[in-house]
Length: 384
Image 1 (spheres, rainbow, N blue to C red):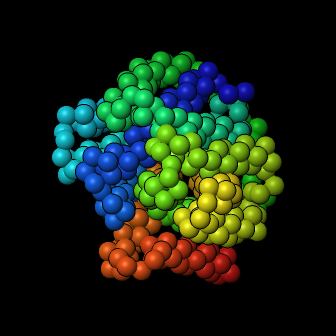
Image 2 (image 1 turned 180 degrees about the vertical axis):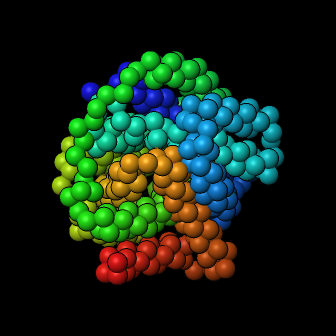
Image 3 (image 1 turned 60 degrees about the horizontal axis):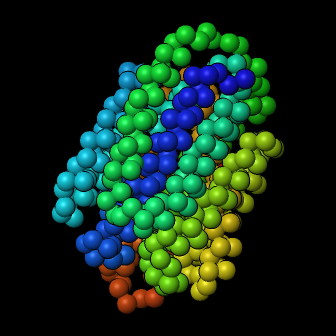
């Protein structure tokens, strides 16, 4: 049974994810429409945010381990609120990029803290808690992207800041309530089967390393796709609202994957599932960015979301299926995400800048990077 405190933390997680997607994913539409940012500028902005994410997530995990989850939730919420207020009053492109970086730091204080809180034993198994965690944030992401485009069209681009700001104020108000509930609850025994006992310790560590390799590359793909969605929408003659609806399908597919892999655990410590999902990711990445029609775009998104679902689930589950240092491991898990958030758009922007007339060069360069990542996975598998 999931404790009342954790239910409230899941609610905080949902709100946080919806607000994060509303701001960060549609920031690229804002930059394109307000300041005339093209593909290179949007990719560079995404790369800078990814670089900040690496450092902030790593330190956020260490600070969570040292100072506790609740304190980090307060700091993260306050940091995001401050950044969104600055976003409403600062009107230059440089200022908006700096606001994005400050927002990223705040987010990186929140996620390791939430991951640590849901992983602490309280009468429910780790597999169940991580499963609900994944479904919650994936639902927030999918709903956020599906509705954000329509809401921004109705409420105006200024809502990119004030709507997430209002949600973060609600989230901040919920933190002390959840903290009081958590303090009152007594620890209850967990009947989780320790899956690392079913495999040798060396294999468990190897699967963790492989998942930490695969997950950054999945975010290489994600953070290359998201800044280019405005360009995809323009090519397929989609409005901002329609782009939000059509291009959110992969997020719903990821949500479905989380639900399926939560209920069925046969993928645990199975290399074929991890490798197969990586190959599917590569194929669908090309299909998504080079799709000639909406139909192809939709099909590619389904495979894209399913593959990312298993890769992310593997990374988080293997990271948290340990007996200690949950905060540090959660920070490293998020930092690995940051590596992908940085590398993908950085490579895409560099190739577009160096070879501006080459058709599809950004897509092919990042696709090649994903193939290199798959080779790394095979190497780690074969050489212990």
